[in-house]
Length: 183
Image (cartoon, rainbow, N blue to C red):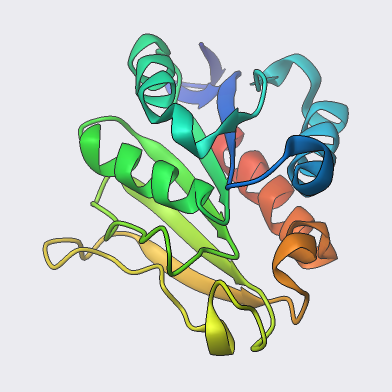
């Protein structure tokens, strides 16, 4: 949906935000993404559509959702969920992704190089002792043909499972949704 802002300018009135879990039981490992999703819904209400959080093994479901939505979608993955969201951005490289947030990506579920349809991207890195990403390396990167995506890193210093709870991660996600809604 779009609305007229002023003399020919247009702004988004709705955006999709899809969260994707990594490996593991939702009750034990899903709290961080549920917390982020709750914050998004509380702040933006009906301006944001964010259905249930899906598991990274539901990659085909993720693609079906992205294909059926007309509004731009912000993608948020945690752990192996980063694999799903980055590969979906590549598979649907003609669809606009204003922002992609990769929280504590895992070396065991490699992320894809980001295509130019991703406007901005952030990797929220866990601490250096993370078994799933030793030394907290930056795994998110742009593809060789992508000179458009603005990429940055938030070093949370937190363990793998609690990285989504870092205040800077929540702050950045909410800011990026604000930007996408007013772009």
